Image 1 (cartoon, one colour):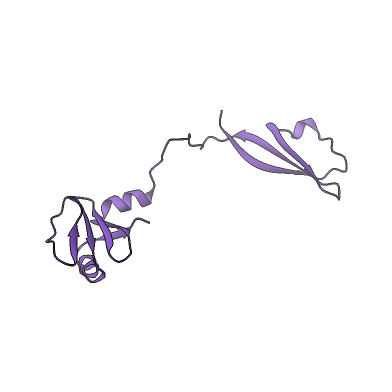
Image 2 (cartoon, helix red, strand yellow):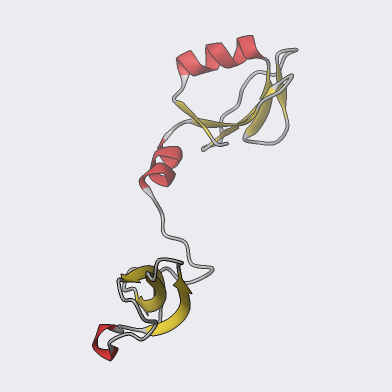
Length: 121
């Protein structure tokens, strides 16, 4: 059974609640100085995602559709292509693997004009 936490406020002078208002398992009760009582309940949530499960988003689809992702920046930018692309290595472009490269800012600007890109940080 999956649960979602929500707050329930009850404006009663006493700490006793009407049993008909309870809609789940009570997990917390807090009473303020003016007599207002706040009660937290756990209730079922049909949209709950299990721990360890991942639901793809529109952002994931967009990142898969671009030519390369900028994964880190510093002295040189690390870019990773989504498909195998052979770039000519030079002082400004250094190959790390088949799809990953370290590039300078000037080389990155020329690659941005040629390919579609997105950041991944």
